[in-house]
Every structure is written in structure tokens, then in C-alpha cells.
Length: 97
Image 1 (cartoon, rainbow, N blue to C red):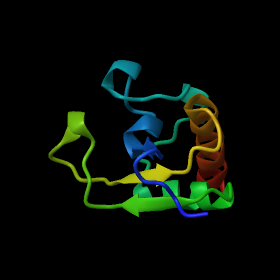
Image 2 (image 1 turned 90 degrees about the horizontal axis):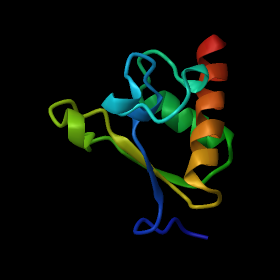
Image 3 (image 1 turned 120 degrees about the vertical axis):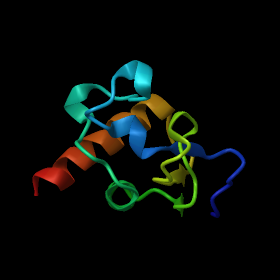
Image 4 (image 1 turned 180 degrees about the vertical axis):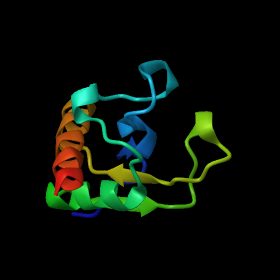
């Protein structure tokens, strides 16, 4: 099954940035956040979860438009809140190893 880009969840590295507050764009609890998340480790976390995705490195988070960190489109196989928690948990494991 191919990824439907029009209906996919969008994940920005800023959602998982430990240095950001909720009002600055962090979407996960501090326990699931990491310092300096990159598109590469976000991609690795999504791959480890076995989800279909598409990385778009040329994109920039709207509130941080001058810094093109990229984004990932992920298949809608679960609610976004659950996806954010799972990806954040996986990012924590990746950064610890």
C-alpha cells in the first residue's frame, strides 16, 4: 500500500525538541523529547516502528521558517497523539544508544 500524502500525518523535528516549550511547538511530554532532533534520527525512529513515510528535507516548520530542518509524512495507522508518543519513545532509545 502506497503512502497517501494528502492524508498522511506530518511530523516536524520541532515536535520532539527538548529545548522548546509547548507554546513554541513541542508536542510531546518532556519524557519523550530529545535534544536537537534531526530529520535523520526522526526517519530512523519511524523506520524502526515499521511505518510508511516520506521525508521532505526542504520543508521548514512554519514558526521557524528560516531554518529548513525538514519534515516527515507518515501513514495514518493510529491517532496522531499515539504516533507522537511512540516516535518520541523511539527517539529517546536511539539517542541513549
